Image 1 (cartoon, rainbow, N blue to C red):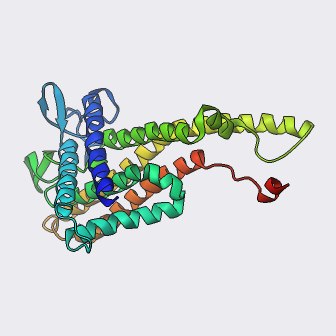
Image 2 (image 1 turned 180 degrees about the horizontal axis):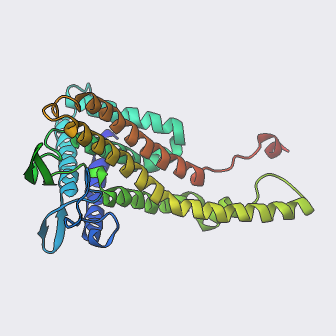
Image 3 (image 1 turned 90 degrees about the horizontal axis):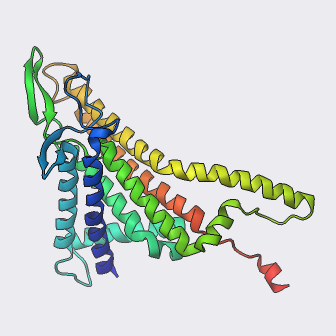
Length: 308
């Protein structure tokens, strides 16, 4: 079971990478696209910086960190499971503790039935976001690259590396992957008619004129729910991007606030960002899990009514 979970986690990371590439290829046509260097910006640019091209595909500095995180997770997973033992120790113990802890936590949130179908995605997204956030805090990320000399020292204009989740292309890609999985899980659990019933059918028992009123009300509520569902990928992507981008801007500001103390002032905020990295990974995972539970949960029948 544990080996199968690890394989699914690794495969999921690999499957997610092409989505990042697709979004990066379209980055020049989006608002948060590859930055235009003709317009000076204060602080970090909102878009990732293109550092090269492979077969016409733009390679950005955020993609470099994305690949670093993916490779690091794959290598660690292979290393931790290379010699599985009944009594785990070392890296295997850490990996199993993390996987089993996440499984038990999600089982308490969405139930034992649904967690068996969806755990591979939720665990992968949590571990990947956490690894990406923490790798983005390594000294040199955002501070090594091309730049120019100023009165206050050397300023990096085109960093070679940028926090992966500080790129809207990646966060939206992950949100859209979840949206596609959400549709598949909903259809598998409820079926097409069941999904329509969950969205538009009146809940509870009523009769006569009140039944007609409830049908109209719940149909209107269902239409609003459709709008809410369509905006979920956008809110998920922007929430993760905004918090990560704000954290990087804060570290950048602290590093340049007082000349000569750029190495000291950001240190307390690095510890804060370590905590924020865990929180943002947990929030993204929990929101996607709850969204899945809301559409996939089955209405329980009243046992008293069943006996009658």
